[in-house]
Amino acid sequence: MFWIAGFTGKAAHQPLMVDFGRYAMGNNKEPQTVSIEGKEYRLDNFTQEQKMLLDHCVDLDRKIASCQFQFDQLRVGKDAFLKMLQQSLEEQPQ
Image (cartoon, rainbow, N blue to C red; front, side):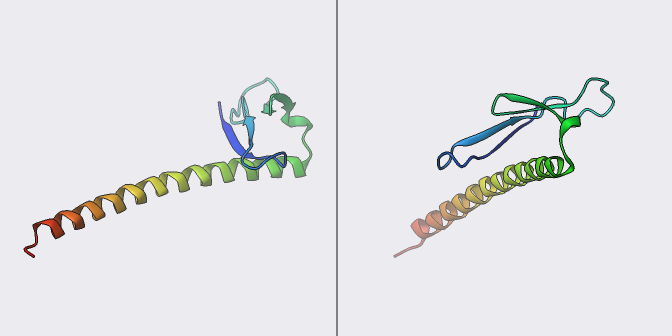
């Protein structure tokens, strides 16, 4: 199951939840569906533009997750270097 978080126009930071259900399954005989804010849609009823917009949402969700992962790594790295600097300064004779 895939989820994508975005923003609706309703309020700042209000998530838009999309459940991709069978979106990624290729050989499934059942219609592929996507659930957006609890409402289910069949992908075979999407226009080309709607499919493109969905693809953008999926891609952007992956990029957001990747950026968050990289941000976490950067934060931990910065904290480690700051700790090493502080230890070095404490060991230095004054």
